[in-house]
Image 1 (cartoon, one colour):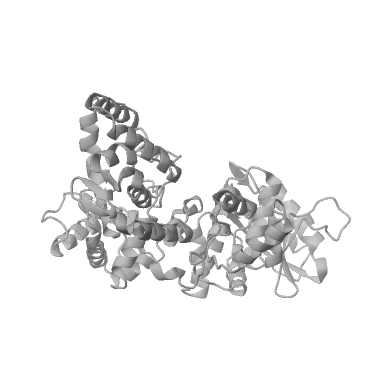
Image 2 (cartoon, rainbow, N blue to C red):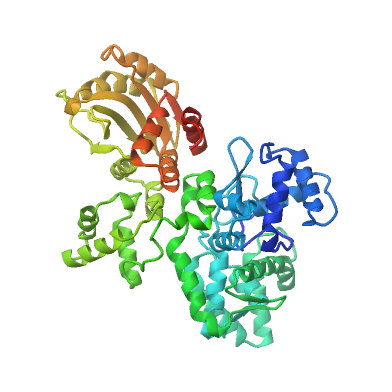
Length: 542
């Protein structure tokens, strides 16, 4: 099956004003989200019955629960819920607030305007066909920006949305789509039909022999209608039912201002590279989660887009910008800005409170090909967690081997980390285990007057050899018999996901270190869900 080249959203028509009813029905059907959802046909059927009972859905129940699954998919699309590693549905903060009846219109609007492709639901294994990998777009926001243009007379028709808007795959295509619409409006009927036919042939992913323009319009017109409907809910555009979206020119500046606020507060979210759970949880933050942050209330570091992009580029090696001092910001900005301008930008940045993981860092770190840079960025994640980090320190013994990352904490304690940028799979072999136990750990014990307390491996991709962590602990007792030194192995996604979780939940750095240490028990973690379950089981619910 071909990949999707065109926007998609669950159908048939689902007005956002019924989103809360859908959540209430789901809570009833799953006994407060305590009944497993994945693969549980009975739960899916119960959800359909609950929707019927609330008058949200037509009075019929499918044979296999497909109707319930479709409604749940809609709730996942807007990040009100997600499926955890054990197959249970979990409410996000936004979903929980809406369910409780708190600021429902505001939270629903926020979820509409932060909806993006890709998102956690569209990347689930059960979602087919997948979107093409080049999608990076916020559909509702894109559609509202497009409509709010004088050059288009502040309207876009359903036909134009179906053919030109739904086929856009990136936020930066606004000018291109605008140009296509203008050319279409000015064309004669024969040319218009030809344009529509070409689009139908190039963008329809469905396996059909009939790929005519009319067939395309019928198939995707419902999607256009749904996006028009949800955009109308935000109050920023008006839906002339079945025909067009429009903006009253008198409120155009207000619409621009509201969208600008969203662009500053909610940039494109790259957390799907970390995990679908972290993507859903972060994208599902409620409207008040940014109250503690001044980010979005202050203009960007520069009104000039090129300057702003340059600042983002220079700071892309740091996961948590709040963690950088004024001097650190200035030092990094001075790599390309004069000292006086770097000072100005650093001042402006320190006035802001980001309260969020740096998306540019996420993209760069999880796709890093340079081994040395991967090690440095891994060190930056540990530094943001709260550890005092030394990169590639010289061991006490007169030997050539040196560890990549040394972590200092709690006075006289330290850990050592080996960062492995294997793009396919890292295997913790018997040879590497022996090397850690007989060289790294003994040679660094006593460094800076500290005792080595744990070891770990951070991998760029998957791993094997978890059982050898226990072997290292046993072997190192020969050299350091007075302590039980345990290890941890985790992917870079999990490490970054832990930091992201800590930032989102305002966990202080001292507590972050404590949580990380409690996860060190000669275990390996391939998902952030596994890691957080281990942490929360030991510490209780955070």
